[in-house]
Amino acid sequence: MQGRGRERTLLFIAFIYTLTGGVVLYLREPGESRMLAIAAAVVMFAAFMLLSITWQIKGVGYDQYITPIVSFLTGTGMVFLIRLKPAYGYRQLAWLVVGIAAFYLTTVLVYNYRLLADYKYVIALTGILALLLPIFFGIELGGAKSWLDLGVFNLQPSEFVKLLLVLFLGGYLVENRVLLHSGGDKKYFLPGLRQWGPLLGMWLVSLLVLVFQRDLGTALIYFATFLAMLYVATSRLLYILAGIVMFSIGGVAAYMAVGHVHTRVAIWLNPWLSAQGAGYQLIQSLYAINAGGIVGAGLDAGFPRFIPAVHTDFIFSAICEETGLFGGVGILLVFILLVYRGFKIALASRDDYSEILAAGFTALLGLQVFIIVAGVTKLLPMTGITLPFISYGGSSLVANFILAGMLLNISGETLQHEK
Amino acid sequence: MMLEILIFVLRTAFQVLIYAFIFVVIIYVVKDLRGTGQVVEVRRGQKIYQGQCYLKVEHAPGDSGLAGSVLPLGAETRMGRNPKSEIVLSEKVISNNHARIYFDQGQYWLEDLGSTNGTFLNGLPLSEPAVLANGDRIKIGDYIFRLVRWKNEVESDHRVRPGAT
Image 1 (tube, rainbow over the protein chains, first blue to last red):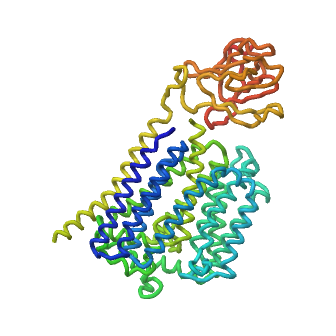
Image 2 (tube, each protein chain N blue to C red):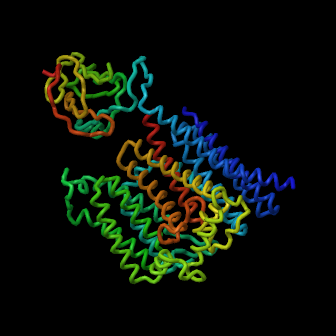
Image 3 (cartoon, chains in turn cyan, blue):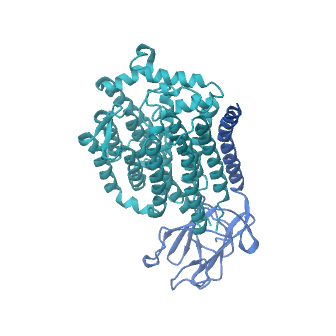
């Protein structure tokens, strides 16, 4: 039996961290809604400790860092959400409980994840259907038409389609690895249409998402994840170059044809032209990051509420304002550690499918962080996606918990073989 | 006033804890890395490099269910019909204790244990223990194994080494 002491030590530090944040919020403004951050800290600590002990008794060799890192990031998210929009606290806490349940269920039910490789076309079909639904029945929030109104809550299917995409591509790439890899050592080998097919298909799907749902960020993530997985499977730069060229063509076409995309790029190039209009959000974000300086204004001492949508897309700006460069870099480092563990799991895995799957999930997560942080700091045009585990958003939180659960599944398999 | 000092302390603690968390994770991760590739103690007191080598089953009789599987190598891996062997090969032309692969002086060695029908290394019958290299093909009865060092599946040149005459 393998000890999981490290996991519990780290969970404890994450708990103390979230608790400290929660106590600051409560002392500043005692009230019921401000208690929620403390509640979240306790709920997460109890649930994850229980899971850690269960895993130790069962003797599964899951990675010991994923759970604490996820707990740390989610704790950060809860503290800042309750500081920014206390009204959303209850909802997010409910989603957190659902997320932890989904996390646990993923490790229990999908333990035999290799079977999923046989159902790749079913998965692909489900994914495409889930993407199409909002186009016909969806509602529009924040410029992107990608939500389904389910009465009690709104669901964003594209968050879950990301996971289906990785599962499908994993199965597909393993099956066609040899074909895609053919051509031996020739550097400029061009495979036939059968190999180009999926590349074209993915390009089209990304463009459809872009045009019909006007969801720039999701389209970018789909395509970039696809390229990353293709590279892991074939280690061929040619595919990546071809992909980038194709995406650029698609991007330019979208820039010309879709007004939404055009606006975003214009804001990125010069937000000051529309400082009171479309550029207001980005300018406020930059002001907030600047106001934070090196050490930040202190938790609950800044004025990040000037930024519209600060609790979802722009939460990173609020973190930067209140904890400064210090805290912002810290959060990014935690994400880097998560990505490091993900790739480590991919490298240690014993078969191609697990390797591609772990690398795909990790790339998905890392790219998401990169794209949104680049967006709020004006490195790239702003695309409305969530910061994993931190932003407000139920679909995103649950989907990311499932992703973390899948990484644990793959790591458990690996370590058990090594014993 | 007291409250403000307390809040200030807690705020600072909140930020410091971000780095405390990162610091502890990095300490653990570095410890993990130090552990990789180091010599570890395994059964029979022999030392081997962890997770360095495995046998890939390239061909096996249809009913054995072994075809395509991957068998990690330990300090000593015995092969034969004997159910106590690490790799049990149930075929009539294979002896009870047919051959073994063992780790010695930093290398894996293949030795024929006086089998009736012989052990073949890269197509040649084995007469004395021979050092195994990545990509070597071992034939026992109808089974064909290939030695793979880590994941580095490079074709080796099938040179004849001492022992395979």
